[in-house]
Length: 409
Image (tube, rainbow, N blue to C red; front, side, top):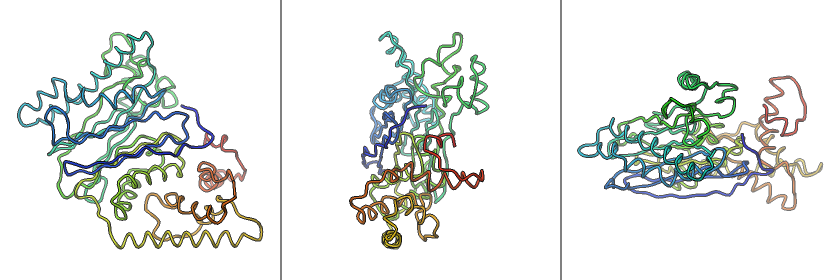
C-alpha cells in the first residue's frame, strides 16, 4: 500500500508543447509517498511517418518505479513498430486494426520486460498501470490498463471516460478466479488493488494460462472515438491519485473554469495537482491536459471574477486574523474552517475552497511571517476542515483523532 512522508513533497515536474492543432501541459508531484513512482509520455508527431499523429500517456507505478519508467521510454515504440500496427497503416488506417496493433504493443512490451528481468536473475516485482491516448487526424484512441483514467470533454460535458480495472469488477474477478486466485478486500489475493497492469510478474505465472488469462492481465482496453472538430474540448489523463478525490464531472468543470482565466496549461495542471493534494490525496499525482482548438478560451469576465474572488479571500483572511488578534493569532486551520462555513460566491467549480488554499495561505503567511505551525500541513488541514466534521456527523462522536487514526476513515 506504500509508506508516507511526514510532509508532502510539493515540488512539481512540468512540461508543455503544441503541434498537430493540439496544446498540452502536464504536472506531476510526489506528494505524501516516500517515492515518486509515476511517469508520463507526451509526443507530438510519431515515428514511422506518422507525423500527424500524437501520443500521450500516464503510468502509475507500484512496488517500485522500474516498470513505469521503462514503459514511458519504450511503450510507444513497441506499439508503432509491431507488425499488426504497421499493417493497419498500409492504406487508409483501419480502426479495428489500429486497436489490435496497440494491444499487441502492450503484450509485447510486457513479455520483453519479463525477459529482461529473468536475464538479471531477479524478478522485478514492480508494476504499472497505463492510461493514454493516440490521436490521429480522424480518431482518438483511448488506451487503458489499470485504474488510472482518461476522459474526453466534448460540447461542455464529459463525453467519454475509461473504465477502471478493479479486481471486484465481475469480468475481472471471473478471470482471477479462473486463474486460481481470489479477490479479498477488493484486491487480487488480498494484495494488489488493480486487476490489469504491466509488470507485476508475480501475478503472471499460472501454467497453462495465456498472458491475458493470468491473475493480472497486461491487455489494455482500447476505445476508438471519431473526432468532432469544434466540439472536442480537452482530454485529461491522470493517475488514481487525482481520481481518488475528484469525480469526472468535478475535474472537467474545474479545468473548464481554469481555461477561462489562463491559456497556460502548465498552470492549470499545477492547480489540479495542488487542489487534489488539499482535497486529501495521499498518492503520487500526475496529470496530462490536452486541448483541442475547441477548448474554452480566456474570458475577460471570468478573469475579473477570479481577481475579485482572490481580493475578497485576502480581505476575509485579514478580518479573521484581526478579529482573533486579542486572543492570539489563529492558526491556518481556524481560518480555513471559518471560510468553509461561509457562502463564498464564484469559487471554482469542482475545486471549491481547496483550489484557493494557496491564495489564503499566502496572505496568512504575510500577516504572520514568524509563525511556525504544523497545523498548516495539508493533511492536518483537510482532516480538521473536512473529515472531522463528516466523522462527527456520521457517528455523533466528537473526538480529537490523530491523523494516523484517521487513515482508516
